Image 1: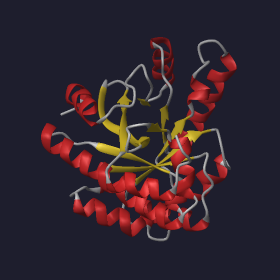
Image 2: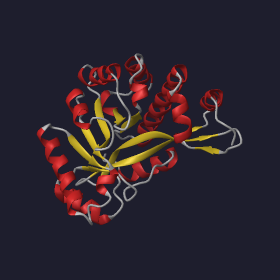
Image 3: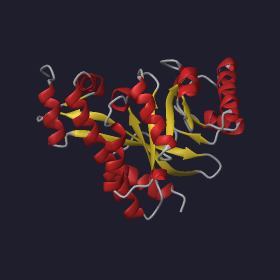
Image 4: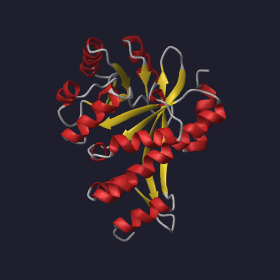
Length: 259
């Protein structure tokens, strides 16, 4: 594949060649799924050649206008999908929007988000904003997130907790409702007691702060059992469900949603 350009990405946006995937989030105890995380995980060239996000996202991030165009398209598409799914299945759903800090850092982020929520008739409890902790957040981004939480009652999720930039400082600055423990902490809990103790410590800290905790990267029944017995109420991983395209996700949620 030739070097990808900004114009290639603009055309992919216009021609709807960026694929969104949704990964289910499981509610322990109830064994239900009414929430899923959505992210852009694949772009296709005009010849249907796949382009990974590790290639196209840095190009988007480096250009202000392209960031705005991509962010608007991403939100519009994700909101359209969840709205369509709720109408078709007649269930209440929450979509967790996977947002990079370079998107949250834009001054227009809040107004654009609210405008698109209104367009697709979504309420605050239909949307979560999930920030990847491996991206730096500037003060504009921090204020945007605080506004969404304080003024508009939209839940904030801190993803990849334990890896990345200033974990505790982010918890101090931003009113997150949920933190997601990185799969790197979950991967070895069956084999290494210290790994399990670390995530138990995170869970206890979160309880003190009235923050819910979701464990990511669950791949075995043993991991799920350990986490549920430890007091986790939410989980995500390939054991529960891999990232799915819209029709596959709709089938999954139709089977497991609480009604």
